[in-house]
Image (tube, rainbow, N blue to C red; front, side, top):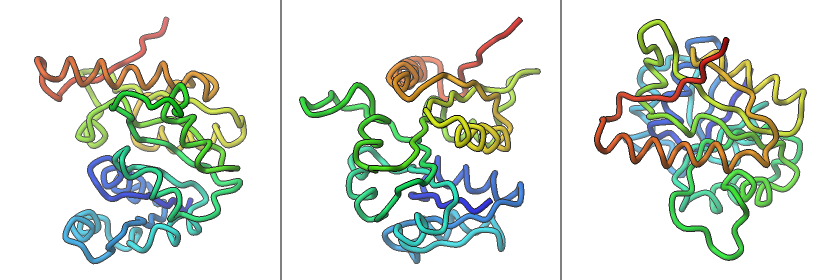
Length: 204
């Protein structure tokens, strides 16, 4: 699958590495494709990954991942151009207090900004390093997927499974605020327990 990743930082870079290893084609969309950070992200990915502009990555991807700091989200979506009909995976976290115009969740704000995109929330409740080593004993860390389009959600769930994570369908996009609250809990716990922690949903 062709995947455009907007942002080549820790989360975006690690997702690109995992998906390239599974045979997906990756195009990182960044402001400066020649920057040292971008070159470092590409160094270990081989011929399955390259970098270009944000609009190029958005047009390239059958699925697009938004993996930039929250402060850069609005400009990134504006730079992406027309996202109508695209599968857009929001991996961001809005950790600042919401403004009066903000919605209940970052993901719902992303859906409003990226008008017409099929938006899903995922990959936001764990440390970036856990993406590369998701195993804890005999279990794997969980990532949650929220979104409304059943066909597109199946695609997102498969992509998430390709990372090696345990994948849980967490319902519609209106549940994204619940998922995003786990990030704040993870951050608080990591201050005393370190970053080598993750959430896992247990089932009987």
